[in-house]
Image (cartoon, rainbow over all chains, first blue to last red; front, side, top):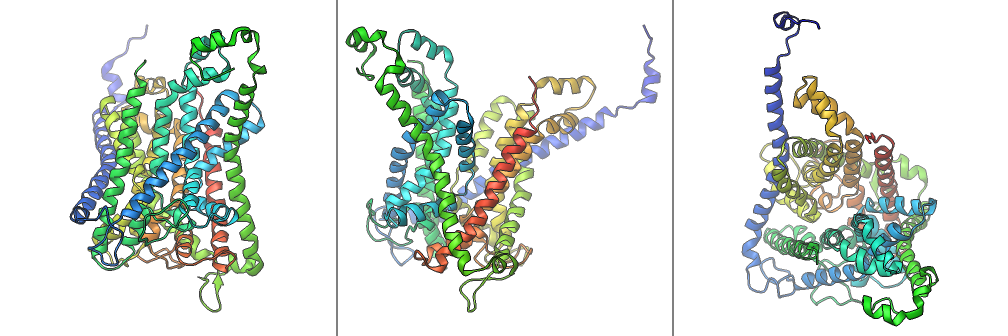
Length: 296
Length: 313
């Protein structure tokens, strides 16, 4: 064995460990600050919106009246109704198709180029900007199918927009179901669909729900595609499925585009309503997720 | 036979059908076809996007030459004579995108590094969803905040115009931070512990391990997250429409009002662009450029994360 002399080692190599650890500590705080800046802006944004909008939100009739040309009068009822309609239709259209596509890709699809094509395609669709979906909706739903700039066209456009997120989340949830569950079900003589319906899907529900809520929140908050599809910026009646429509984000855009000062407050008040709506959706998702994820 | 009955019912009702093979079952086949049709919707969507953009873009180029579109430096479709150089719009998009990435890359990476390497599991389980709230806030809200709060604040130090690229770009950066952060975080977390421990065993400090071992190992994921962030910034509409204005200009001065490709498209559609009109075709032509740019970025991100992924098993 070689005998080492500590005194000689330190003379040759000085590891400066203390100063290196100090630099490390400084960087730890820099990273933390980087993280906190985002949260700080989030807090500032919410405080600012509540500060500017709360008084206007509490004006009588803001939630129940139709818009007015004056900033401190009227309300946003058509936009609230439009957004609720859209959310419901997106859930009814996009969730079954999305979960179906996920089931096909995870449980049925053979491993070949065609499946690979569908997978790459879904990945790309998730990255297509919302406004490009608007071009699709305008060309196909508004003109080709002749639905016009109606709530239906907007809802179908947003359904397509939501689809990739739902598919990706549902696939992950389905993939996470242990194979032993399927084998046990097959072992009892169940068919494939019985296995999926009674064992795989119930097990995957919490994960699927998360994806559904993320994508529906995104759809409810989206304005770009609906601007292109032709949502109106001023509506004095409650929108129906085959009528012209407006939604909360479009109402916010419409208020914020007007120069008179009072409209900024109306925009802030509408933002509070939109954020509360999205928070409510997320709260429902968390509740359902906890309810379903307990083993029954 | 039924596929919806409870286990006991179907067992008795089926009787001899227990001998049948599942692949002979008619409902089973129908269900397989229905699920395939669901998956097909996504392919049809892509096909629809490409077809509709192609059709209107071809119509656009029957009236405007490629030279006018790609070589001119003015975008003034409503003037007489109109000019259709796409560059001012691309300029606006590049400017706001660069500003947003200057914000999103450092903030996203710091968040990812802190959450993966320093935060206790409990703190990370609170901080990560908190940061991701930023990605869930509708983009009109960022536009509102940029115009109503940030621009007046910037005016205290800088001679910014009411609509300016800086304010919109900064807010977009905050918005994209979770996109960069989340994917980078996953990449950093997938670097195996043994690599870090090997590094510590050589007497290397935690920070040096992060910069020299962990980040290089996670580089493909980090690059992919940045490219996805760029793609989001390029496609972002409402923030720039509200806060950056609608003034197509060739400028890299962030204090001025500009117009991005997306803002032009939204602005024209919210006005009057009946089908077949020239305005209608022009939003599809600009949309074609936007779609191709984001497509290239998305494919690039996908390719990098697959091609350069380090495998440790």
